[in-house]
Length: 266
Ligand SMILES: Nc1ncnc2c1ncn2[C@@H]1O[C@H](COP(=O)(O)OP(=O)(O)OP(=O)(O)O)[C@@H](O)[C@H]1O
Image (cartoon, rainbow, N blue to C red; front, side, top):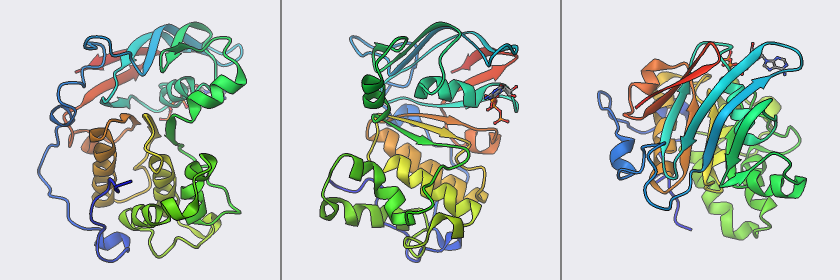
């Protein structure tokens, strides 16, 4: 497979991470050729995610999400934002099928997920790449092995992906850290390893929870460009973030959570 991330930067140190032009506003609408409308799906294209009047509470607590309805279109790019505690992670967990809605319907890749078998659930999850807020790297595997894991799970031969994993690691500035175990990585390095792992298998849907929370602004822009490249190649991308500076760089749909409700800003 041809690498998606283009020419890697010269050295792999974070402060030499290639050049991204400032003062530009990338347009994912142009990149995804009009397929970024979210709820305005064209023709027979099925949404990647559909929520219908979804409510969610933890145990007997208050409703974290109330009557949330939206669609994520194939090939689309959007941000999910809102104040701390607004329910962004909860919404991502619902898409990832790691929690169930208290009411309403959740469909992922065209399948309504209530009562779904564990086997089918695993199959749906494999079509997603996820960047967790707490990274969830496996401490006994090296950075390289962590990033290669989704390809190993697909039972691909290492020779077929080794160069691609190494190139992506270089692109995110971890070329010199690939043989290191996660406990020895900094927070920003762990975050980049988690991002590389989520991208490597080119998932149909990428969910990222504050994926630039631990890196400096120039690296954040570089990572954003990586997400946009993935989107250009067909992946639907949903990025949860508080970072308005980052969101302002991209002309993309914003899903805004507040007081349990979702507002869509196109
Ligand atoms: N496992 C849980 N059990 C009980 N309550 C929870 C649980 N997880 C989250 N909550 C509550 O649900 C609400 C939404 O949390 P969530 O983590 O989804 O918000 P968020 O928008 O992602 O916040 P942040 O931006 O701070 O990460 C919060 O009030 C939180 O305390």
